[in-house]
Length: 347
Image (cartoon, rainbow, N blue to C red; front, top):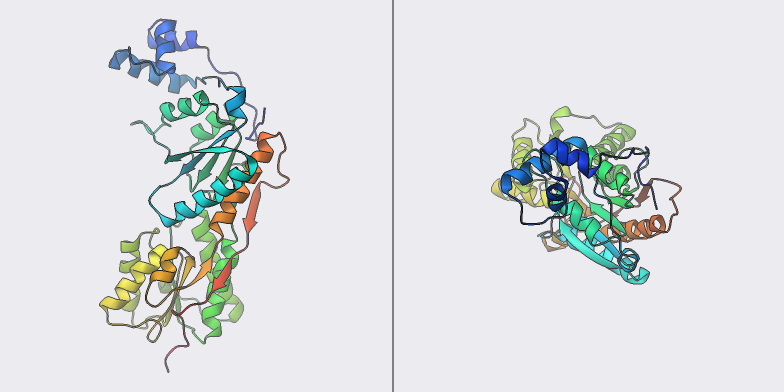
């Protein structure tokens, strides 16, 4: 079996210990663990709390046929073009590898904030050989659960820095931030603002660092008031752009750290009667389909989402075969896609 974490895991408590802790019989505790319906709600609650409190691990019951041909893909959402690109990449690579994919949306948690054991038990019951997590923010409990079950997993564009030894795939976000800013500098802009995402998110901080690095290399003044965070929310991006426009010396260009947020920036500029790119230039990040549909079409930094997802699936296959990747972090190149939203600043 494959160990996916960096630390060894001690054997957990037995079901008998859990039953004693919850004040029930072993058969009753077993019914809860196996998802049986014939258990009183209060009894189920006591057993579930005991399972979480003691760190009980339900041992996987893999079927050989299933475990050789089934993987799980856990997406942050099923309703975005981002998810569509990731799903396309995983499906293509899975087809080449002769695997089937089970798709889930999100990692549910219970009222106490702990991982939903139902989802985890379903994962082991269907005998999945491995899991891909897209834009996931896993808890220490979830990492521990996967390690204890010896289930190989790979993170696609993780929200936070993963623990040591966890395999992940992402884009060259820092270089993408440099490229976007250098493009605006080359056009002659000096007053360049940035609308960044979540401050603690890996990709957002890397893109912001790239922006700052490009300004520093060009000897261009860095203005703290030009840095705004919108948390990858379109409405928040609109508000941050309006704040930038209200400055005594507003920017002539803005680097928006996601195409989704760029839609909010476009909305703010339209409210103020400003034209893109005649009055202000805009660069996005991602190269989602929305970037081509906007008017004018958005200049943006392309990160290869489908290729990232396919790479993650291929790494997972290697891990399922017992082969650990030499590096735990794989980054794919980004590139600028020039369209109609950037131009030299007005005199």
